[in-house]
Length: 105
Image (cartoon, rainbow, N blue to C red; front, side, top):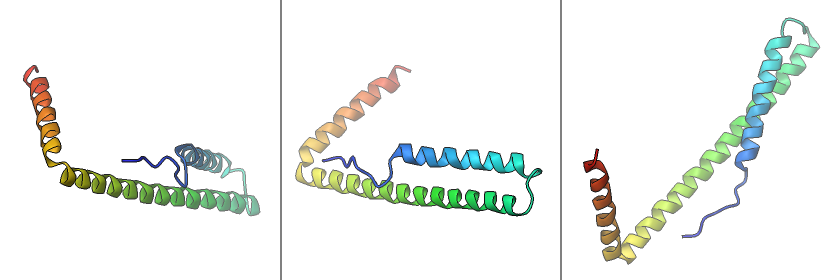
């Protein structure tokens, strides 16, 4: 099963977007009392843009995770269908090891 390493958005990009969102929100809260009129509207506009980018990032990340999850399930089902006895052996081994671990507690 090959892993897909290139994604439309990396985790670093997502984290950077959320840090920018938090920073803009904090700045908006700090300057709300000081700003009036156009300055407040401009800051709110920037905040809304960052929120929209964050939503888009989350949407893309969610879609990517769902797709990778579907691929993993499909690969697992395919492997089990092609190698049923190996799958039974691995499952029995994992069950045995878990039984040993839990019986010690």
